[in-house]
Image (cartoon, rainbow, N blue to C red; front, top):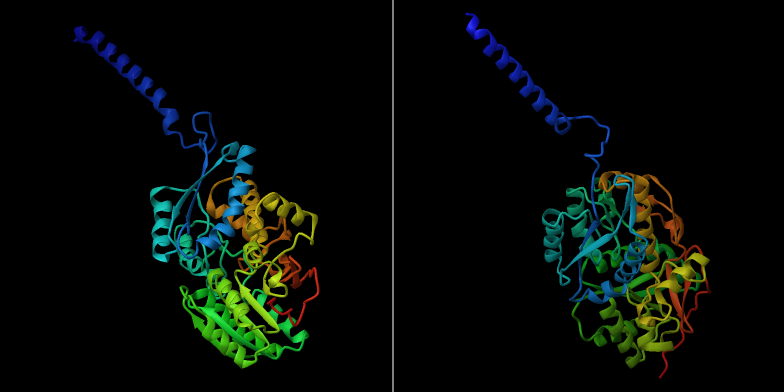
Length: 420
């Protein structure tokens, strides 16, 4: 029996040594402690933001003139300063944009968004172009818990669904938030009684014409006719002649720039000069004035802000447009999109994380200091008190705010006649 004693002891000692060595090497890897250690700090070298944008097709003109100049200004500016500080990583992270062209097609946009989220694993998504696109993008963003701060596009029909889509925040003013009611007040103040409406055959046109039919009669303005037009229409002369024959005080084109530019050109050619002429989106862009010059004196469109309204707004307009062609200007969307980008950066920094849910909660419950002043969201809509303007009018080469909280000029009615 004794001859087995030493080997057994040696075997026991070796076994204990092996167990001790194994435990020592595996303990850090299997630790479940919530305290960060040097070997468990999260690492990340950038913030990846994905977009499906209409880089081609009929919506390209809006996209190129509206949100694109904002992100092409602010992202490089932020990156020049190191990016956005994220406490979770203990440093600033630069932003990388990944953009796919949806060719102004809603189905393609939907596929692009899902590819960005599922395949490219983007941290955030930025918005597509247009009301119909936003309507389609909203449920996708909500499905994947991705924050969506919208740009071009309204939410007349979408707003009632927003409580079930907590990740979606609307930034642009739109038909009944609070544009058409302000237009009704302006027309009523000058004694206008009738209007003739054309609207584009898509969600934007349907929403605006529907709201006009509901809101304008509250201000004593009867809509004599409302006619839909296809996006690719090339001749509006027959409709314009009908509008002229109707004798309506106001002509309202709830359409996109292609149709608004065509309506303006052909109204001039026909000598159709109603007392009020509104087109939007389109009139709010600098390219509208660049094309027609001061012939458009008195023409109305939608707006949010003027550089005359605050030093901050003047600084923004100077930054965006100084030394650049006039056609890049957008008095309706740019202030909203710029403010939304400021909200995004501040919310990420306040949340200290790239977690979309936590950032979403910050945006829903906070006030932010932006180019529009103190802004906040009511029911996920940029509160209408954050809009210093609603209706604009070209006056001697300047796009003035004539309707809204902070007008910069008196509403001219009737509009001056088109020059011959």
